Length: 365
Ligand SMILES: *Cc1c(COP(=O)(O)O)cnc(C)c1O
Image (cartoon, rainbow, N blue to C red; front, top):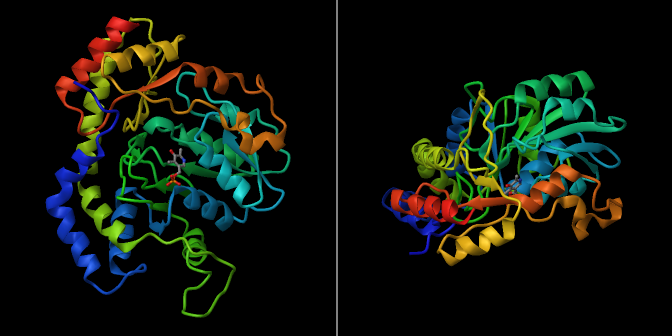
């Protein structure tokens, strides 16, 4: 039996009975840009994130880029980013004309921390983007203090962390702008692209509403040079239904993660480390193994699909050749990229499937 890495069809099937009437209502409404479905989802998502505002946008990359623009970051500015994130975090910075400055993560949590911000070169730096990688929150409390001390903004990339908590508070309301992706594979995934920014800063929220909609709050009046990046109402209708189930589905992910952690304890396998203050949502379950590629091949032979998030750090991608980084410049990110392996996890992974994963891993390590 093959254990798929993630089963999106099963997720759809479980929601279909409630989601299809909601989407049909949106389709038959005669209203196809922003409007009541988007308003309702934004209100529900803001409440869920313990933030005052949520602004729906077209995707997670736009969420990050528009958040940077809303905070006034642009040409020539520098922004601290993790050296081991998905490239979108870097691209958002580049897209608005600023320069990404990599900082290394803590090798055990995979997240950047306050110490990394404090020891970074801060000349010209306007902001730091903390990524809650794999669904485990970074220490936003200490990061906020470090950012404040440095006189820079803290932005969060929550694309992998819908529903996660730090010190009992949901990710989404801690800083000036928390950026979300609703890419189908995320914990709160849509049926296509989507994204949002949550904030409790009314000025930032106002700017984001302009930026995503041609700089306009009134038809044919354009206060700033905005763009077209709006959350689609049919996706919003689906997301509202899915949001109601998010805690339950995240709880199923946590159950699988606990089973993996217990089974792999004391095996020598590198396991995710969860700080005491964090309630992670296990977007991914990432192990570390010195012979990662060989292990992945053996697991595949046993029907267990795995992936690597991510095999090449942004500083070694062709897209960033012009920044002049070389192999060896960010050793923690490079070492992680060689050793990490993501095991199947998701709300629709059955007990039997997780047992098959555990047995395969214990046999092959
Ligand atoms: C998915 C993801 C994004 C980008 O989201 P899109 O909706 O695909 O544009 C950004 N950052 C991280 C960490 C992600 O995982």
